[in-house]
Image 1 (cartoon, rainbow, N blue to C red):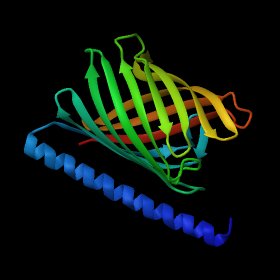
Image 2 (cartoon, rainbow, N blue to C red; image 1 turned 180 degrees about the vertical axis):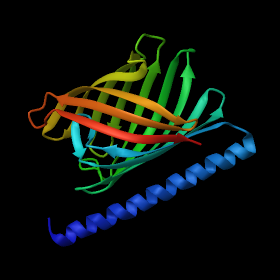
Image 3 (cartoon, rainbow, N blue to C red; image 1 turned 120 degrees about the horizontal axis):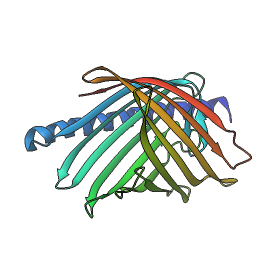
Length: 240
């Protein structure tokens, strides 16, 4: 790839990042306007932190960097919720990347939660400029809070299926959230693999609306093209 093509790609990524950021701001503003006119409750969360790597479906797609994210959700109808998320990473040695997501959630059969969503990627090393739709099923009133999600990438006609379980345990008097995940995915025409791993995180409340979170993730696959990895992260989360 020529220097001119690299420059054009970087310019396009920056433009797409601005478009996604403006869209996210517009939707957030719309949520607050809706809240003022309809009286619906809005749940908002803002996070910022450091991570040694970023992974998705067993693939390490970005190295050390600073992560930031915002998520906003509100009830739009009885038992129907609308959520928005915007995540950005400033990588120290690679291109910046962003992910923008919208999800409509509903509760059915009292204890089953469904989420239908859309995610757009920008700057991602193998999903750059592409998008996915997904359907998540969770709740189920079962131990360990299992969930199952199916993703579909229409640009590549790729499917991903991922399941997870989670629990909270006491360690030295501190609540530690632990989870395990496993899935099957396609990431290129040459690599369809199974991935799996686990996560553990602990949160410490610094104030009523500010938490310090430390986490560790282990991820591995059955692919000969990919390596296992331990990922460490630390960050702050606030609600408003």
